[in-house]
Image (tube, rainbow, N blue to C red; front, side, top):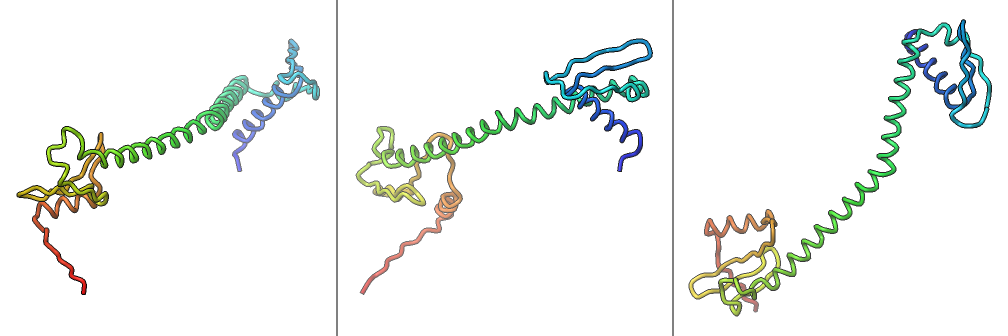
Length: 180
């Protein structure tokens, strides 16, 4: 599957990680001996690896160690993201949904009282609330107005835009239905 240098690289990386994490190691060189204490403070096994490190290129050892550090950092970041950021992301989505729901409720309440506000330009006696798809109809002496109240940055829905277009194109008719 791997070519020979790459395969030995991963084998050396795995060996180095096992050594650093689990064991008390004695590294032997031709001139000196280095003793490393285990990261986990238990002595699981004692490994003498003179043939492995004596034949390993120092640059290969450095790159193996460096890639191990990089893989560890990336793994740590992904664990932190899963443990901390992901729940926060779900909480933000939930708050956003609740905010949208409150905005909709505020808009519906405001629609009910808008004709009674001081700055409403027409007589409230001649306003009839419908609710959907438009908020109401204002009856004046010379005209009939379709009224839609909007709050903040809310926009007309597709249905409301179609109704607005039909009114502007004067495609309005009177229909009388008689029951017998």
